[in-house]
Image (cartoon, rainbow, N blue to C red):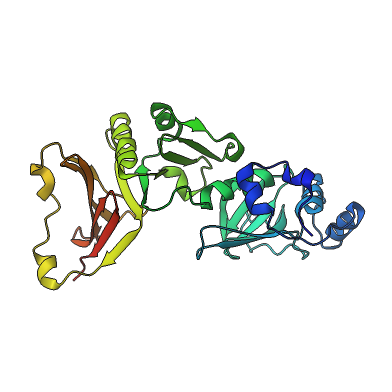
Length: 320
C-alpha cells in the first residue's frame, strides 16, 4: 500500500514527489503497537505509536539516478541492547524506528517525536519525522543540471550569510537542528545540532561558478578568517605525468594575476591545508584550488590541484 492522501498532505510538493512512489505495509492497530512495545521493553511514547501508524513499513529511495539512497521506516521489534558504558546510547531511552542511507545509519525516536540519527554515536537530530523526510528531500534531490558547484565555508556563517545574500528560509525543511535557505542560484545549508561534525561549516550549492564566487566573496567580507573548499559536478579526475606535475604552477603562482583573491583551503581534517584562488580572466571566473597534506612534523605534500571553470571542474592527482 501507499501513504494516505492525508499523510501526503503533510509534505511539500518536493517530498511528495518522492513519497508517492513509496510503498509500506498495512499499519497495525494502535493497541497492538503499544502491546508489542511493552513486550520488548520499549517505552510506548505516543509520538512513536503515531509514527508507526502513519509511516511504519515505509520504504523509499532518494537521490540522483545511480546514486539513490534507501530509507526504511518502522519500529525495530527487539529488546534494548545498549553498548556497555555508553550512557548516551539511544538504545537506553528511545525506540529504534528504522534505517537510513542504505542501512548506514540507524534511526531512533524520543518521547518528543524527534528523529535521532546514530552511527556508533548520535550524529544528527530532526524535530519530527516530517522534517526528517523534508530534509532528505531537499538535501538529496538534484537542483540543477550540471555543471553546478558546491562550496564549503569554515567557520559556519549560516543565517548571517543567508541574510547578506538575501536568501529566503526553506521553512518546511528547517528546524532547530538544521536550516536551509535558497534564492538567486544558491541553496545554503547550516547544521545547527552542536554534536554534529557538520555544525562547524556552512554548505552552499551553486547553480553556476558566478553564483559560487558571489557567495564566497560575500562570506569573505563577513568573515576575515574564512576558509574555503570547492567541488563541482562534473569533476574530471586526471593523473598528470611526472614531468607535468613537476612543472605545475606553485600554490602562490596566481598572486600576480590582477584582482586575484586567495583564501585558505580547509576540510574536516586538521592535516589538510592549501589555498583557493579566485581569478577572473577575460570576464570569466576561474577557481584554482590546492589541497595540501601536512603531517605531524609540519612536512607538506601537494595532493591535488583543482581547476573550476563555468563548464565544471578538473582535479589533478599530484602525489608522488
